[in-house]
Image 1 (cartoon, rainbow, N blue to C red):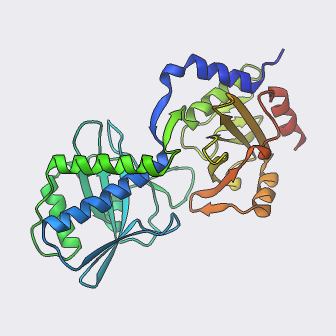
Image 2 (spheres, rainbow, N blue to C red; image 1 turned 60 degrees about the vertical axis):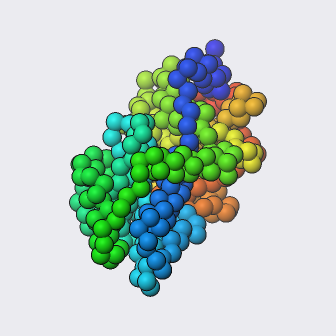
Image 3 (spheres, rainbow, N blue to C red; image 1 turned 180 degrees about the horizontal axis):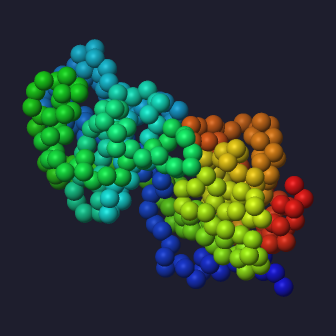
Length: 329
């Protein structure tokens, strides 16, 4: 008898519950970094008696930059990237076609130390690597620690030079920066009720889906992390998207690029019901759905917000349902 996919995933969650991730969701880490950068620069300018300045945050996620710093009628657009990775920084989703002057990189490992680097777009481009080597998207990553080997004094010197301040800047104390970064995190959590992640990652679910399918077929292959699709089944490209039900009673799925897959499997989880929901669509069906519904297109793909009515299958979705859909489309 074939076990349902929903029950299999529930078993995996229970078996691995001690490994469950807790922390800020990825997009809120970005908000955290932007808010900290704003407060840090404001306090830095005040400390150094910089006058006639304005720091203007971006208006929405579609803007090409995060902060615009204006000083004495001179304006500079700054893109902020923030990483809390312990072993080395990971700054991703860098889009060089976007309209910004400087890239401000902030790395906060787990211990009480914060590193800064500011790069011109040309400097950043030299050390960036493509997010996915199999594609030519304007989507780049920086993961080197070399940019932080210089002291913060060098960072402040470059910041002063790039903003045409022409003066030596006095930095904030480490405890002041720690205070600002903690307050920024608190504010993000306070303003966004769904900011905290208490779940397994999408990558974990991709592995579990592969494990489930492997129980019934040898015609399945798990692709490397970061590949343009997640699983190959009977020569078909399968993309997997996962979301937990948020406080608005919707599931949020992002980075949907129909050109990169033949089929897409959506997995939604309602932690209050302890129940999974599934939907599978061919590329053509997904393209038609996107045309018929308002969706948020971003540089890294379509983003959709859907309710439970979007899904045709619940916990009882099985390997046979999966296979039959692919064979018939």
